[in-house]
Amino acid sequence: MTRVRLLLIGPPGVGKGTQAGIISRKFGIPQIATGDMLRQEVKNASDLGTKAKAYMDRGELVPDSLVISMLEQRLQGKDAGKGFILDGFPRTVAQADALEIKFRELGIDRFLVIEFKVNEESIITRLSARRVCSKCGKIYNMLTEPPLKDGLCNECGSSLYQRDDDKETTIRERFKVYNSKTAPLTEYYANKGLLKTVRADGSIESINSDVTAIIEKAFHG
Ligand code: AMP
Image (cartoon, rainbow, N blue to C red; front, side, top):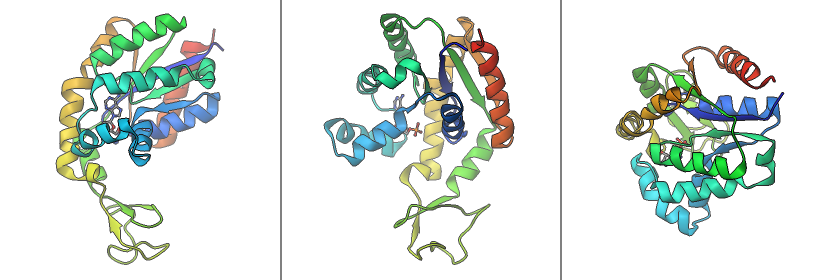
């Protein structure tokens, strides 16, 4: 099998992070998630994190220049030489163009883009029902896994809260941003013959078996 290099594209809450994690373990390649990297920068209160936070809280994209240089540096990491999964990058045509230049510089000429497709309203309902424990971080879903006592964590009894970017208005904003800025990338990559599309409404296992089959077919030789 040749080096597996994947770009995952999909709207917020589609489960691409979950799939990226499974593929990462299965194929022994790093999952490079720009959202996680940015959240870490915010936590560290770095210069980048301070600049990124306001955009993230509003559900907007962090400016291209900031995200592109962060990702370019990450791709130089030794572990990325074995292959990688980009989870949440690129999200704009400008990012895709910059990535193409970086790939050329790194001698990368083979990669695949997987688009995850879902019904928007069902994701909005699911995401806006998510609550997180303020102390231990345990995640609940008010529709499918509500806490035993209203508003309190089953594990530690602390209060639950809703992340700013899980609020319905923010989720709708993130979808709007996805449809206007990121969705055009599917045509961009389809025109290059690099796009595969997976329906992401099913179970984690069935989606993963579709994704694995695509990877094995594309990189087996
Ligand atoms: P995610 O965890 O991938 O949903 O990302 C969370 C937030 O981080 C997004 O709503 C954006 O504000 C920001 N972000 C993550 N990746 C990118 C990217 N490639 N370009 C711009 N902003 C990004």
